[in-house]
Length: 456
Image (cartoon, helix red, strand yellow):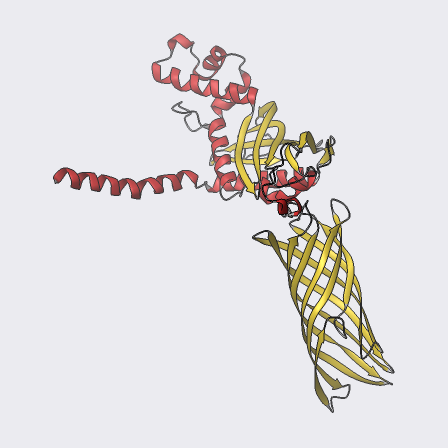
């Protein structure tokens, strides 16, 4: 019985302590987060300004797959993975194990930069030969020297991550390959005792593997992309500790190399159900954000009343709902309508939500269904008599989104149901009345719109 109680207590301790230990390992320091934000900025620049090199082979387009990741898919959070990675990098370069630095933390790194061999490093740091070191000093200095030699030669892996997006797996690895190590005292800055500058190149490899079952030969099976950009990692040592950051270099051309690509073949595709042959693929082609511009027309009163409008739209890819993606954002439009001698002109703006659902085999053509709300203000001119207009409107719509290229698509928006609650007040403020309009499909204030959306 006593043994069972002891065993139970041991298990409880493990259950409580183990998760806390793991959480502590994964939590970055403030310095790590601070450094990670600099790296995040550099990596964002690398992705945004990358120039594509290499061409895809076969009918599939691998670019839509990598663009679907976005920067969030490629770059981890500075407050989590990236911050932990920066703590690890800083410790590898500056932590001298049990080497005594007497408060001069830059000393081991400074002497390493000056030394060509381990013997020279020992002599510079300890002012002794290797044979004169005790076991503790020999072990500490040998481990530090060997680790730095390896890092300098092979580079350092900053992080590895795997992202699964529907039927595709993205294996992402980011490294920093060193080209030059410099170090010196900064004569112009009294705060900095020693500055170490590590020049090199950021490299992010993205390997994509997709399932071909139920797809077509226009779909991707495998692809390998590589981002590259020169940058530098800087450590400033002071009496209060050290500060680590990433700095841009003068020649910082960024490239995106398409290393290889492989499309699905007839042998890869196995249709257990014939209906799968026309089943749409996943939303791999949808961007993180879009900006759109539209023009539209509407008719009412047996086509005697007409409306025209111009509008703009911003959408953000908020979440995935099954095989669809929900975008939220805002729109604004200017509309004018006329009926005999009566002319209405107003501006409407407000939030919108649009659900994109793929209907093509490649998943790049989408049906859109959404809901928009607008605050409305403007004026009504009836044969020289002017009224001010204010109110709100709600529109239920459907539509189609068809790509024209990698970054642009044509969009058609069709109104299904529109409701408006408007107040007309005379210019002198002497009278006012309320008007409620409900339109099914195309009508006054319910226009069919055609426009373009730009991805980014």
